[in-house]
Structures are given as C-alpha cells and as structure tokens.
Image 1 (cartoon, rainbow, N blue to C red):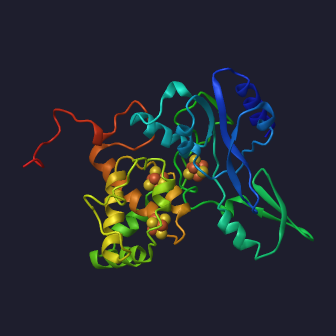
Image 2 (cartoon, rainbow, N blue to C red):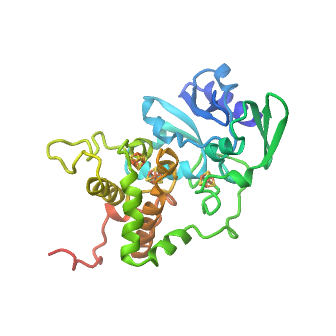
Image 3 (tube, rainbow, N blue to C red):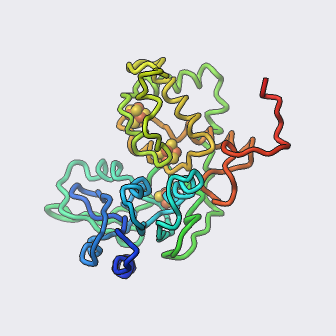
Length: 312
Ligand code: SF4
Ligand code: SF4
Ligand code: SF4
C-alpha cells in the first residue's frame, strides 16, 4: 500500500499529470470505488488490493490532461483495445501496471457473512479478515475469486510505464475456454434453450453496455429511434437481437475483462457469449484482443491475400 501511495504522491507533483485514477475504500462491506487523486494529500486515500475490481479505463476520457492510472492486466487489455481504436492518446497516459493473482467477488463474500454486520475488513496475503460487531472471521481469498480469474491467462499487464510486483506465471492455470467448448458440444436445440432462458430474464437495463470499456459509441444502436435497429420492448425476440448484435459488435474487440458479467443484475453469463466470439476470431484470424498493441485487429484491417469469396 505504501508503494502505491508513494508512487502516486511523486506523480501528482509533476506539472504534466492532472490526476491519478485509482481506488479508495467504499462505504459498503467489501466495496472499493474509483477515486481520482488530484493532490498529494488525496493520494493517501488510494488503495490497491484484491477487492479493486472495477475497470478504471473508462474514466480516462473524463480528463482533458494527462492522467496516471493503476491497471490490472485485464484493465490494461482494454487500454490496448482503446489505443488501437484511437479512443485514447498514449502520450496522455502514465500507466502503472499491477500484477494480479485474481480479484475477489464482493457478492460471494456478502453471501458468506450471512447478513452479519461488518465493522471492517482487511486483506493480508491470501486471506481476507472480516471484523464483526463481536468477533472476527478469516476467509481464503482463492475461494471467493471472480469467475473470470481462475483461468485468466494474462497476469502481467500487456502495456505499462512502470510495473508493481513480480511477473506471475500462467502455465498451470485451468483452460480459459473450457466452458465455451462444453456449450459448443450441446445439440442446437439445447443451446437455443440455454440462451433463451438467459435472454428472457434480461431487463434491458444496459448496465452491461454502460460498464463495457469497449462500448464507447456516443449513441448505442439500442437507443437509436431513426432508424430503429431493434424493438425497445423487453421480450425474448428483441432481447436476443440486442445480445447477438452486441456480441458481433464486440467480436475481435472484447478483451474479456468480465465487467459485463459483474454488472449484470440478472447474472446472465455474458462472458460465455463473448468468449465464444473470441474463440471464433482466434480460430479464423489467429488474433486475441488486448494482448499486443502492435498486432492490428482483424476487423479493422485487411490483407491482399485474404480470401474474398464471401463478397458477392
Ligand atoms: S481477470 Fe486476470 S487480471 Fe483481471 S482480476 Fe482476474 S486474474 Fe486479475
Ligand atoms: S463485453 Fe464484457 S468482457 Fe468484453 S470488454 Fe466489454 S465488459 Fe469486458
Ligand atoms: S446488464 Fe444484464 S439485465 Fe441488464 S441489459 Fe445487460 S444482460 Fe440485460
């Protein structure tokens, strides 16, 4: 913690840095919230731990000047995507990369404390300690990780100006696409039923759109009235159209930060859909979004030798 405060204090003294984008402790149990430090004193509030789940990249364009930002590897992948799509300027960023062992799911933790009043919590190594009105309890962090973390294959940010922590090996992690492969094996009717059951529950609240760092259109296709691309009412047919069009918009772009999954109040497994698109793009174009800023995204580039037989 001292490290990040000292780094931030040094950076904010620089004339060219307008703010540091990081996290502070929230008011609810197990909550951290985005925080913008503008003075050395502000920097003392900054924290960085396994409950820092939000992807902060979406806040960069709220500032006109240069910002310093703390990024986990999955956040840094979003930076790569946005830089490739010219949505942010590299020279207006100072990137502090954080190596990551996984982030905690606050919902799972709240379930584990079974409604007891939490006075405070602290994280130490691979344990989280919860202090109640009377007594305390310790949990293993590995039992409360976000679903996206156990198989995450990027534990060191793919882009940074300075890096905190030692590089983490990913060789023995579970397979990222295991669930997608499982779903692919289902007969078509079962697959349809699986997704229909999920899409039917969608509230069309668009939290998944608002939180997605790669969904930055000023006017999303779902809001357009003229022409109206999809019915705005909440029913299976239009919900399905919304999700499938969105998945296509994110094909070759979704960097699997899992923020849509985390934000969805109905626990719709949006990552499964987006990982299926990632798998297809990887198979067809040998491309994984967010990994390497120097590899051009397949859907915004072309090669003369690309097969043309799909053009009629
Ligand atoms: S997805 Fe990867 S980088 Fe992101 S919080 Fe989980 S382990 Fe860390
Ligand atoms: S679609 Fe979901 S997982 Fe993909 S970049 Fe957007 S928020 Fe992240
Ligand atoms: S966040 Fe969930 S409920 Fe809301 S629109 Fe997205 S999928 Fe539907």
